[in-house]
Amino acid sequence: MTIRGKFTCWACERITQPPAPFHAIVRARANLLAMILYAKFGQRLPLNRQSDGYAREGIELDVSTLADWVGTSQRHASTARRADPSPYPGCRRIHGDDTTVSVLARNKTVTGRLWTYVRDDRPFGRGDPPPTMFFYSRDRGGEQPRRHLVGWVILRADAYPGFGELCEAKRSPRPVVEAACWAHGRRKFLALSDLKQAPSATEAVRRIDEIFAIEREVNSAAPNQRHVVRQEWLKPLVAALQGWTRTERARLSRHAGTAKAIDYMVKRWSAFTRLLDDGRICLTNNAAARALRGIVIGRRAWLFAGSDRGGHDQAARSTRVARAQFQGRSSSSPAAG
Image (cartoon, rainbow, N blue to C red):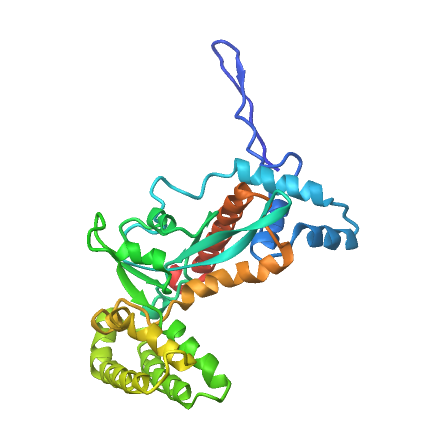
């Protein structure tokens, strides 16, 4: 309950009163609205299931009412985007990834994209959870990451060709440094290894696991310390892996699954090995993949976005929920005080 005082001017006897505090939804409590929004965009619980849950508690809240509240809260909320879309100015390293999302169209659904960009400093000794930002687009064109990312130096991502345009030398103000994801490279061998029909794929997994084991030892070290360890321990392992891939590839058919997995890494070898000379680069892009996990799980429940506007709203709300989770965990962390 908010008390608003009234003030009277002794000279003119005019009465003034501060305006009432802003309420996103008339006669709806802010904590109830926050709970609904977090359940939908943080826990990926559709409004119809929330409505059923409230009904079991004896509270009648129609899906249409909840949808109106969610839509109104988005229209009244301050924008999550700035004129500069770069989510974390001054950060020199970022993780990027995207996933599909169905969007309702006339008599059908079309495929849109949800993009995520994550700043994760935990491998560098900082315990704060990674802040995350989401964007929506109707297509997966290369202009999307060019619009999202302005002035970045290091981008850890998968092999999506649209990211490659960011790395061109002529890019202004400067090209982005591409760092390939070792988890993606390992995953292609692991899928073949699980079938137990490709001994060479099993050997590749073993060699890459040795690299992961060394990296785990310095997972919370400073960049300069990571660089020293990588030069001393990782570099020989990576060189041995490169020699093995050349020998193994020469005896395989180009149609073999292991050959395709080797080609994936060999064609991007400079991007895979860039971490050896820069301690700021992480070994994997798992931070971005984890950020999208909730979207992937949630779309099996809510099925589709109602429109392009709904896709943009979903990205904005998911960003706000992720940001609130980040700020809440940071404030409760002992290091935050």
